[in-house]
Image 1 (cartoon, rainbow, N blue to C red):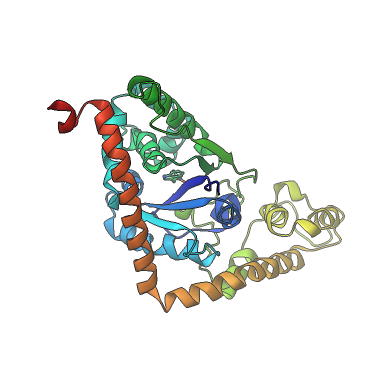
Image 2: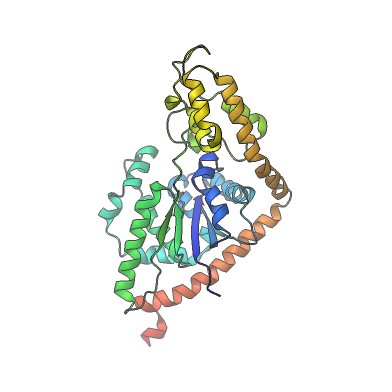
Length: 336
Ligand code: TRP
């Protein structure tokens, strides 16, 4: 039997996951797990690149991100949950790859630039600037074939592919030691925040979390920003400037066109439209909440999955490291 291709993806452990993560990646992961050998990384080291001053948050988020992934339906019997900081091969590869990456290439990475601006950094740390190198280590310690990513991660994957090719050229002696990873691009548009102001973000307070209960979802949707020019129900609305319409498109595609049409002709008001959306979101989250409840009663199990997954990852990483070190000339077997 031909073995399954391997995918690796991950989440930074900087907070609970929200509906933006759901449409952008989690939903897709649930489908992919049937077809691929799936590694999910709890990226706690990458979380440190921006949140090193908040260890409590990072620690709590390892649990939150793990339970969020399990609650959406990733099957612990199928997937491997890995704690990034527990895999020594990732740390080692990060150092080795750093020799192959010019600093200017990192400085010009568009995602690094955008994120640095968002975080308000004007003096980048070595760790933050280099996180795409560390991410290459994430992907290659297990020689992943495919990496499911959103658009913002494409520059990183392009860099990963360059590093891998360079590594193989320099050290492979005609044999590829590392697999060149391919992106599996998610085609869903990024979900905007409920305030209509752009990206949904943990720090922006405009997100619906997978962990939110029914009443919280209703409350957040009720407060969402719609077309601010529409004052009375009899005014015609413009769905193009309404954050709620973006959610209908993502979570209620069957009714989306009708709702927009009715809004433009003032045949549906915001209250009814929002109620409809809350119903859809809560229907989607109902099974997620059920699974979460189960796992909240079995937190020891989650810890065990992460522990075992990380152990398995270390085994895989160690094998690769033996080869990598030999190829780079840093093995005693070679020296004597
Ligand atoms: N940078 C990714 C994000 O912010 C998370 C991540 C860490 C990742 N390591 C990875 C994604 C490896 C894919 C592959 O979402």
